[in-house]
Length: 266
Image (cartoon, rainbow, N blue to C red; front, side):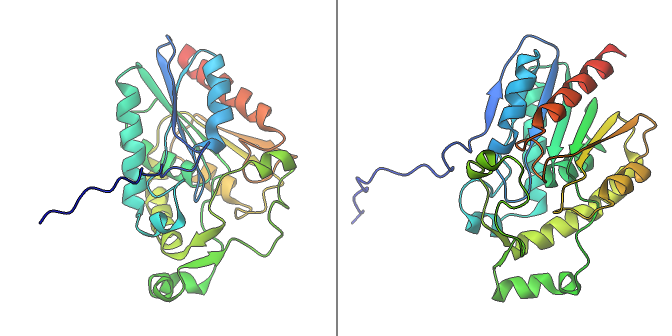
């Protein structure tokens, strides 16, 4: 005998305020925004609203396994994250003539990696690592993750790296790092290294000198390995790692908008 369907109303899976977003406009340029590791589209939303006010069509995607529950991220791989970006690119390219991709942290890694084979017009890469901090456990992380699924993000007090404390209180991200996903990120970084010399599109790199989350020479390493001659580096101060939400975010937003205007005018 067939069981009766449950009358219980299904619950939304995406964390409230962390939903993906789409802001259409009439211009020919569209911008794809990609959030970071364990993060959510919310960390890109203020940037999306600013860029939309500048007249651009904006799509903020949600990476597979993010903005729901940490267990979902354990079941995701770097190929799922790449596919999330590709989905966003194809959706956006259906309504605009040229697509720019802007990514934060791991979103920047995905931006650089996919731009080697997607016909994007330009990239803005923010707070992006070139490599993970050296740790001998990385060589055995798949095995370790089967016994210890999650680990703390760091030894510092939560929020200590933020300058805008109110923005930190409203920030949405998983409280711990899924170890399986750390291993997947490490694999993704290898793909990014191979992609960097192939990139021939304009690139703007933005990083905060006060970012203590990413290995310090990451911006310079990415800059040095990029194949494109059209590359710029912008250093800011007074923000932590999540520069799209922290105190100097308007500097970041304006630099990104100016970059698109410049490339569009070429």
